[in-house]
Image (tube, rainbow, N blue to C red; front, side):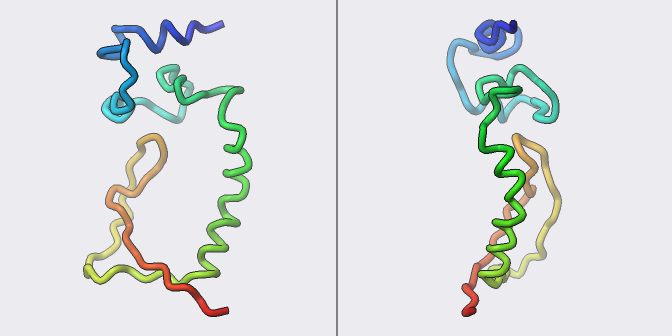
Length: 106
């Protein structure tokens, strides 16, 4: 048994541990790849989101539907797409990709 309350309220781990501040998870360098117990407010282990497995199994199908149904064009800012990534709670593009979705007439 793990005392999750003690971990999430430990002043040695979190500054101002008595208050829930979502920003503390963005300010700290918390690895989402392992089993860091500081992420326990967001569930982990056997109690992870039930839809996670289905989402991971079907994400390629949703992406295929978006690619089939729309033509994707960059906005007219003239910038080259920067594919640099950064790891936060998920893998994200460092600079947001801004584009237009034009419906295909199929």
